[in-house]
Length: 104
Length: 297
Picture 1 (spheres, rainbow over the protein chains, first blue to last red):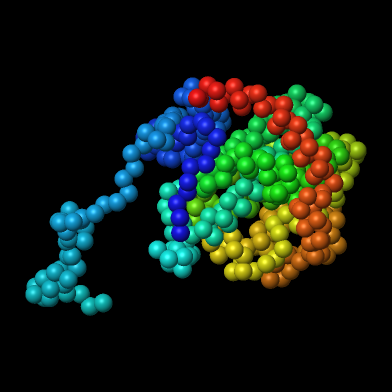
Picture 2 (picture 1 turned 180 degrees about the horizontal axis):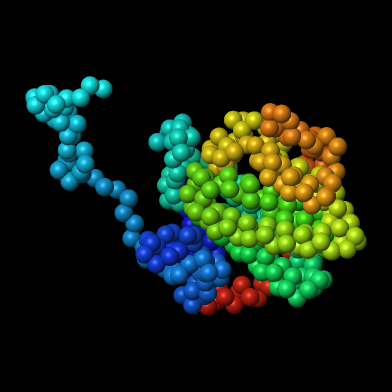
């Protein structure tokens, strides 16, 4: 197992996000390499906007993106999460108590 | 995660992103597969490029130029994915030109007439889109994402190719003959296109869920989708054994696998000439890359 090591000639890598229609979320489309922001804009237009497939693009230098991919819950604060509310068993018990349990 | 756990993860439909740790073997397979795809997009424009100056109308010339631009754009996106996996684009281009890496069989053949241009845009792109749709669920997510755009543009090219073919079929007897002759030239390579019928569970590209279907499934899908469209135009497919059996499976004459192997290992009729063109244009445009990178420095 291993992670990728940087391999490229010298430009900047930009991530491109595209908006297909107003009201939808921007979605990651791909990445481009460009010598600067001006070229990045034109490459992004050519790759993701030439055929009217996007109404807007976000073009972001990859190194400016802060990525968070670990969510450690050291204090076990399950009241923040769906699994902190196990209703199924409790509902079963409550229905039995009330005599409304359905046969399945 | 061990390699076995990783395999189980991707076989269960799991996907990974650029910075995730992945098995070395998986990375190597991804690079090989995606690099060949990038090479094919780049080399695939050369047969069509030969017709830009000879296109029958201005409209066709513009459409063909736009298609060539699309395909080069695809190769840029695809090489970008390969770079993130650890192999620089410059290295990909060097390996392509030196003959170390491969590109698809159909791009090693000559284009004799405008009929070939129509058959390429219609049927070669149709065969390609079937392979590419099988990559939309690729276990390597950045590749799957760019495939959405690529598939969309390829379906546009099929439209263009069909329009070229229909125009010729509605034209003169001579034009219809050009289409029939081109179909006869391309049928062999088209039947070889999806590769030998190795069972998918023995195909490493399927095992790692880089692609989501086997070679024979792809070929059957191609035959099912396009043979009726070929027949309805009054064209003859040059294979007397071609028919759809009662079980829905298409029967056909065994494709020439030796020819496929010979061609993709760099011995096709146009391989050397087209690689030489890549080599010279790469040298001639070196100053452009140098200028652009100086700007970045």
